[in-house]
Image 1 (cartoon, rainbow, N blue to C red):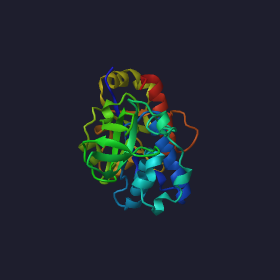
Image 2: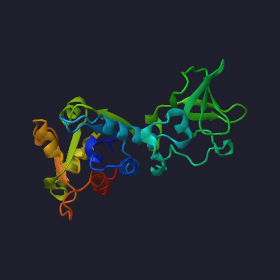
Image 3: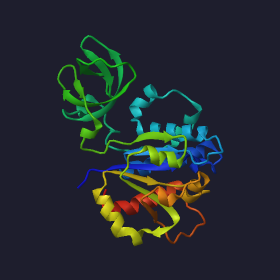
Image 4: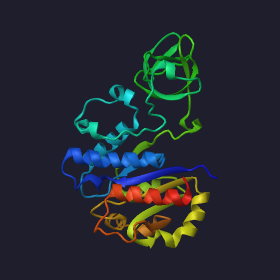
Length: 284
């Protein structure tokens, strides 16, 4: 099976119809949870209203998604107090492998992976906070303070020692990254190297009708992007506003809720429905 890199793209205006920060935060929390449940590797937040300044919505979505993805024991070190985080307490925990519940040294084992943040440099190397009673040593390595690192535990006796690892080497789902496209949907697709792009739309063919050809492409693809529209305007409308034909910039357009009983489907609802169906069918 081809190793998959799965990305999703959500519009900044997904929270534009929600007036209060608490409700916006809750909505973004659903996106973060969905990404973790279905092992999404990257969440891209894109600007979808070229005539409107969407900086505040973009920044809010990105900040809260990054906050969710960061293990709880690192958040105070990596995030300053800011207005966007006033309601962060209602965000649901991810409970992914890189968010361990146990942090005491007695629970650690050689070979365990952890997320950490560098707290000081010594003659021996760099001390790293991994959420335990005392910091661990990244031996013979000097890294600036307050940098997030991914480590593997190599020694438990005496001074606990660790080594840096690449997330790609970890045989577990290790969370998602968050990126932005502040220009447009079209620019997003131009600048990315995905070998399969899937758009979701109520005006597209039913998922069942493209099951076989999409499945064949899915098996061969290593970098997959799934695009979602906003509650007030779908991908077709977003592309049209940019002067782009959606059919020319994506490989497949699918409708994963062909018999919807509501006038519109919210972005976070479409996200859960689409990823669940694709997960069952293509087993990612």
